[in-house]
Image (tube, rainbow, N blue to C red; front, side, top):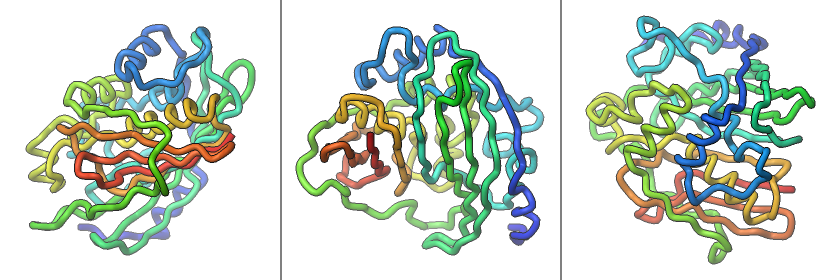
Length: 282
């Protein structure tokens, strides 16, 4: 593994780019079909909550991909020389709904690059800020935290059991089966080529997971919709944090509690271990 030159990586801070997409009926239909039965109700002309994560995906040419199936490093994002990457968490501020037919501009900025030492070795966190603008003005502002990790070591555990943050029985619970079809459909909508979502030998033998990995945005999308259902409308602020990877091939729970104008949620695997936590407020 190449040494991390933090000064070089931090030189990416401040880089920006702008991309566009349209909220098409086809994308909305695919999203609704993928998450059938677990989406919060919205007005007929509005896009489902969390659809913004499917807009303007990167479309790198096949001959420019890295070994993990993502775009090769060193373009908009810094060239972090660590082989494993994953969503670590983030924050979504919703100012207005996206509507069917909207022409959406997303402005992206690399906000920070930080290196830390974790239980599994060196970690590099890259923070990216997004702003989604429609013809009516800015609709969504968000922060995404991406974590890069060292290669898996033989016999290394990918996750430790984590307790749920809920202090009592949840107000709402949804059960979701993490099928390969769910992972395929979401990868297709987002043009996500990360191999650990569909290539079992790669996920287990190269990245060291016990199976295919459920997308972080799938869990965050489920938690955002559950928060909106619990609170009665779209939360103005939604924060989520990945604790450890959710592995496919099981039925997991999306659970949450409302406390006045606040919400606390969690995804819990079949063994009872928390995988992603969330908090929301009106």
